[in-house]
Image 1 (cartoon, rainbow, N blue to C red):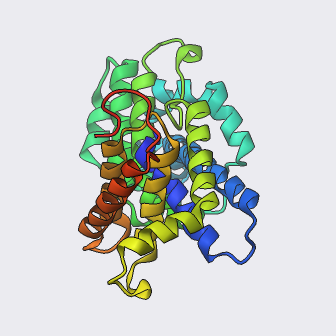
Image 2: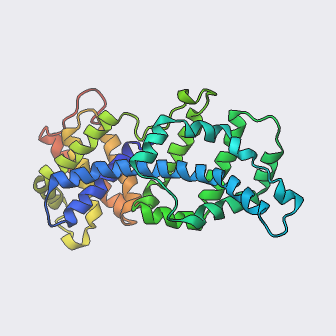
Image 3: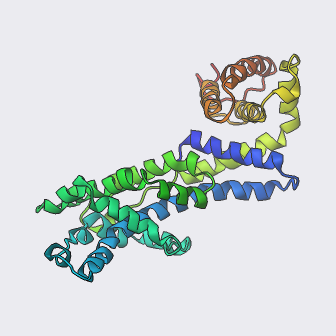
Length: 315
């Protein structure tokens, strides 16, 4: 699921888009921010659907083999055991999944070769052949082959990678989140009664997380000039155009958290943005941001502008 670091990245992406936009429409960018969270869930539904499609292709494959010009005995008796996979059967009865399919209009007709190519990889794997030999299947054991399809077939497929990259602009960033959501789904689907199995939630507490990202986005923009002045006062020896835009945005977000988010410890804020900088900015950004934030923090403390409630939240 999306943790607070992932959510900060979503805000960073939206702030960058806002800074590059000429519209200045905060509400529209805020709407786009919330939609970027929904896109993660949409990606999750599409992936679950693709897993199901790969399983269902066993029936199509069996039909094609039986209709060969000269089918072998094996072709005429293709094993379609996987069609009874308990995880997939439970998924197909899941109301959240069915609602997601309808909401996002999920259909794989536009990429007919994808499912076929993935099933071919599966069919030729030693893991699948071993799965077909098993005689005492349970929901737990049935999940093993589905995990294999996801991790070793779909995620290893360059065609699947390209399809998801084309569909979802933040696929490279959100891919790790998707894997966590799928893993959570495998854990959640533990009951033989389908109605008791739940999909993963995109965040731990959406009501709180929604408030967090909207407030962080708005506060960073609302105090942009003030935060820019703070940063400028500590970077006088730096030419403005030599400071990476991502560094500036990350520092402004950190200052917003120092000043407006009373329950987030200062150390947590600093560590989070330093980690994010490693992935989204320059190699030297980590130490640069750390040094500037330390100086700004000293000034904010002296001016009693660090808004924290509770022991241990400042130091």
